[in-house]
Amino acid sequence: MDMENLDRFVFFEHARKAAEAAYADNPLDADNLTRWGGALLELSQCNPEDSKKLLQEAVSKLEEALTLNPQKHDALWCLGNAFTNHALLSPEINEASSYFNKASDYFQQACDQDPGNELYQKSLEFSFKAPEVYAEFHKSGPIGAEPSTSSAKTATRKKKSSDLKYDIFGWVILAVGIVVWVGFAKNHMPPPPR
Image: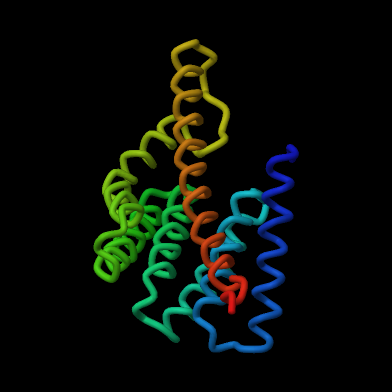
């Protein structure tokens, strides 16, 4: 793990632990559950070995936040991201399609709750293109698999697919990080001057 990823891991692990501690004090705080789910979503990107497990935990926390506040648009958006990540990690097209459909539904709900949010709109637009991206990822086999031939054309295609995958994951991670950071900033605001 390089230094930048280590810093991200430490930051989001701290955020996860803080949210877990806050949950012990108040399990009915939908904002805290959303931060917790967002932190788990980010950690799933930092820790490839446990990414599916962390995504499932993130979904659990975000769904719990929605049971407390069904109108919570940032939780809806984070769930869309979690299901998009699940789909991209799925080896089977049918399983991935199910996750992409769930992601689109949650992105649409987030847009309905906050229609002016450009990030939600872009996520919804991407969700319609996601199955094409998935097909591109899996053209040469599962993500991370070695190509069956050693031709330069196959290597170039794999490189482009890999670059696209990292670009998409990078933007998803950045967006989730911003939402989590804004959530923390809102909760840790200094008191107003007197």
